[in-house]
Length: 298
Image (cartoon, rainbow, N blue to C red; front, side):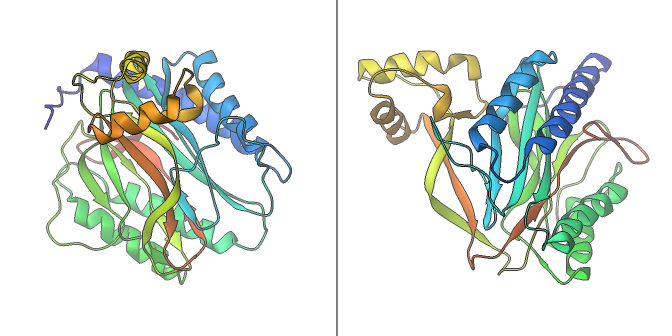
C-alpha cells in the first residue's frame, strides 16, 4: 500500500481549495438537473467549470446515476439522454495537485422520494458527528445504519466510503455504511470521504452491463500500437479515473479492451441495486481532527 505523507499545512490548503471549488460546482450543477435537461451537458459543465474555478481537473468523471443506479454512471460519447422523472445522484470529484475533494447529492425529480433523500443526508451528518481522532470506522458505519433504518430504508451494505490520498480517490480505510466488526482507527490528519447510500430495495448492488469509467492501475509494455498510444494519452490522468468520452483515437474501444485484459486498466461498471430499488446518496470529504473533523466540501 502506498504510504500517505503526513498532513502538512500546504497539503491541507490544497484539500480545502479543492473542497471550495467542488462546493461551488456542486451547487451550480445541482440547479441544472431538471426534467428535459441533457445529462451530457451537465457532466460537461461540471468538468469544465472545475478547471475554470482553478482546480487541476476532475478527480473522476462526473457521475449522474439515476433511480436504481447507485454509482459509476456517466454519459456516453455524444449521449442524447435527458433527465426524466428520475432520482439523480450527482457525484463529483475535484483535485488540486492530486489532493481530492469528493462529494455527492441526490436530486429527486419525481417529487415522491423526499424521505429517501433525507435518509442518506441524515446518515451523512450522523457520521460526521461521530468522526474524530480515535474513532473506528465501524462506529461510523453503525451511525449511518441507525440513521437510514430510522427512516424505514436500508443502507447499501456492499458500498463504502473511503480514504483519500494524492491522485488516489479510493485509499485506505474503507468506511462501511452499516455495522461491522472491527474496523480501522481514524487518526488526526486522515482524509476520508463518507458516502451513505439508502435504498427501498434489498440493500445491495451488483454490476450492470454498461461501463464508461476506467482507471490505469499499472504500467507495463503492450504490443498493439494503438494501445501503446492510448496508454501514452492516459498519462496525464495518472491513477485518477477517466471517461471513455474524454478520449479520441483509432481503435479506441479495442485498445481499452486490450489494456483491461493486460491488467493495465481497471473498469468500473455502473452499479445497480439488485432488487431494482430506488437509491439515494449523500457524501462529503472530511479531514479528521483531535476533537472532530473539517468538512472540506461543505
